[in-house]
Amino acid sequence: MSTAARPAESAGELGVAVLHAVRGQHAFEACVEQLGTAIRLGVFPHGSTLPPERELATRMNVSRATLREAMAALREADLVETRRGRHGGTVVTLTPKLPARSSARRTADRRADWLDTLDFRRIVEPGAAALAASRELTAPQRRTLEKAHAVVAGATKPATHRQADSRFHLTIATLTGSARAVEAVTSVQAGLHEMLGAIPVLGTNIDHSDRQHARIVRAVLAGDPATARRAMEQHCDDTAALLRGLLE
Amino acid sequence: MSTAARPAESAGELGVAVLHAVRGQHAFEACVEQLGTAIRLGVFPHGSTLPPERELATRMNVSRATLREAMAALREADLVETRRGRHGGTVVTLTPKLPARSSARRTADRRADWLDTLDFRRIVEPGAAALAASRELTAPQRRTLEKAHAVVAGATKPATHRQADSRFHLTIATLTGSARAVEAVTSVQAGLHEMLGAIPVLGTNIDHSDRQHARIVRAVLAGDPATARRAMEQHCDDTAALLRGLLE
DNA sequence: GGACAATGGTCTGAGTTCAAACCATTTCGG
DNA sequence: CCGAAATGGTTTGAACTCAGACCATTGTCC
View (cartoon, each protein chain N blue to C red):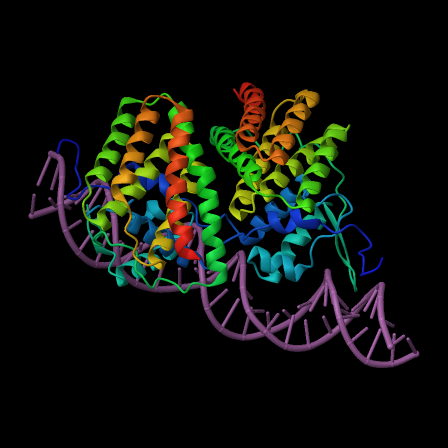
């Protein structure tokens, strides 16, 4: 009883590790964040129409009023435009951009979160690739993957390539059929996007990256989980090495 | 333009897959859920004291008022008791129990979510085991893992074994050092707990499970990621096969 | 015994979010 | 041309949540 022992055993480290935020700030901020990220990642590409407000609100588990506040913010920030009437809706006007350089100050907290993102990515994306490779893919699914790969391989401008790359990785996640896997990869890709905006412009080796993409696609289509995993691991490791170096 | 094509390309499947709930119901319900689950999983074992309200509120990103509502609910449900004064606090009174049988109706939605949990687990836990094995573990970390394993291996009563098992898996996740990995494994374990409560009592093969645990621990301590992953994959697959069969 | 510290308990006013109507605009089909 | 349908726009009152201050209880240390 030297220091001030509790009468009963205290809950230990596990407790502090397990408890996490039950919500992220205001609902409307979270909506702006999620929709804005989806748009910047290219999930909703330039010119596409977002789902109707009522549907988005339902899907994001938020009232329509709150969702509309978020929409107003996106409109304010010139990411989208809105038209009324039948077949109206909200259209993405943002052209693909590389993440803004000054998006956030580099605090120690943020840096830790980034490293965490890289670690988590190393778990999730190779796992998703392997799982996707173990699925019996339908013909449309195979085409979707091939198309996503063709787009990323054919992208010439860095900004376009960036969006296509995100879409490629998200597409693989959707092939797993696991909603949680998609959510995890989305969050990881959002983190990557943020990191890329905060470090000095880096000369991504696009050719190298595309060779790895091709290898991943081949393995997934061939139903070879082990190879798909290894290829994705390699891909994640290469990106991570680059980023870690620049985040020092 | 046969069916009713939109003027602009619609956002496609990726959009609906990527968007997810921005929050889960009411904050106070989410707190009850998270704390209750943590207690039932054994993160806060019988007799241990929860962190002070102010700390919990901060960690869960919720006002103290809201957190206290949740505490009241837990008290009402006889999971905890509260004492005032210095070194007072909230103590776990729940004795380890197997998940309650009737916890929820088996809807199609729920079943899909369960299958999703199993898929996601197959990604996350083996990945976490491999990452943990690739870390240079400190002596206290190694002891923590050995202790968690000893507890689960020594548990005789099913309910105790269940809690120890959860703690074991969570412990491995913490060894990765990744907060997101811990969160993912927590969510997966919570899902498993729920599933175990909804299916006919199954004669878990505890010996078999413990041999796999031992193999995982050896590989992690030996710094052998590939073996750790394979061992954990095997472990997850065995559980999943059992559960999938019973969920039909 | 008295001061202090650590903890749960209570109160209050402001801000956020919700649910559910109902309105306005545009396009499609007859 | 007119009505129906699909969309965004607006309003309203109730419920939830927050932040912060302050109160009450109990144990520890001088």
